[in-house]
Image (cartoon, rainbow, N blue to C red; front, side, top):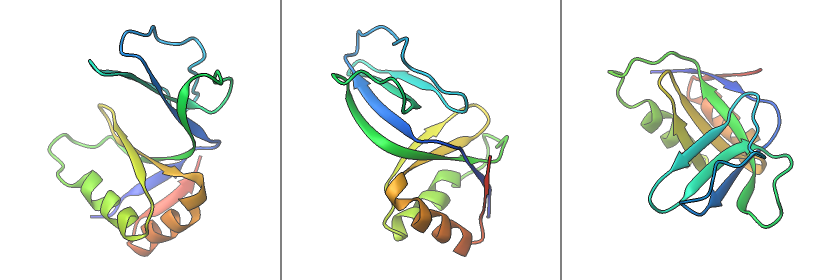
Length: 127
């Protein structure tokens, strides 16, 4: 199974806040913005702009969106893509929505990640 992916412009950041923190006003994202609250933390994935310096964060991510919508019955989408990226030595941060999946890849590994995906038969287009 092969997929079409879209590369979002700009860099993104993954931030960790305390579990009871309010959703921050600085979280912004034209193409992707995610807030995930668990009993252990509030994770924010957003554009890498205006992030307070006292926030625990991992900057320098690029976003690849899997063309969707994907049916819930589809099996192995993330496994297929993440396996290719793992073989290329690219670490990922994955997110899923109702319609599709998103793979965040470190900017320093992006070129190798795209090459690996294309070598495996996937296509990567720029938004």
